[in-house]
Image (cartoon, rainbow, N blue to C red; front, side, top):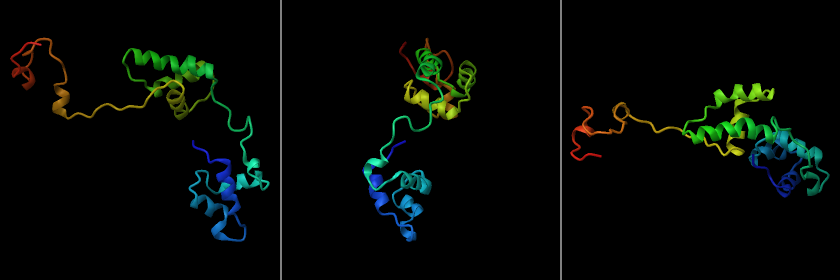
Length: 159
């Protein structure tokens, strides 16, 4: 998630006026497209003492990680690398119960996918859509004329 700079938050809070509906927390959040909305601007205002420095993020604040970096490497990155080496797709829905059992923590599917993407360099890809005719003849023939498909019948040259 992209965070606003301290200076940007400071300038937004300088616009705030409790008596004016066009400069309320909700109006400022909507005008500046702040993801957390009115509540995020209100939290900034509670921390703010009139200086930009008071809006600086403190060390150790925020939500704790669901899994440690070592657990991510052992239980998420390793299966993703093994699947990549074997040219198999990673099924996060099948990986989730394994990770939960091994770590003993309740992890959401979305968190597992984020760890896979950000820390294990996994990518979310989708296969190419094919028509029924294309999916019927996607094989490669070791010997041409092995079947009656158009591709094999019109090929005069061997592989």
